[in-house]
Image 1 (cartoon, rainbow, N blue to C red):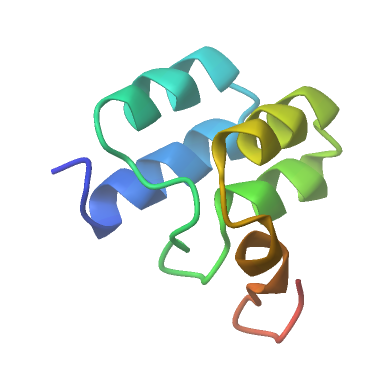
Image 2: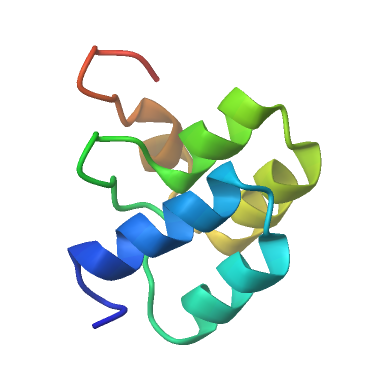
Length: 79
């Protein structure tokens, strides 16, 4: 379940609410750090919208494809 779209939605929601420990747990159990949720918002976008530097740093440190991570766009074409 966590390596599905639902897992991505849960992880992004945890980031949106500032629950980094929950996001870490979801990621440990397979939730993607780069997949967008149903609104095309990635976890990094959610952390950026919150201004949550701690979450942004954690996400950045976890992902190898940093270029791909910052090129993703939401449904409005925003990164």
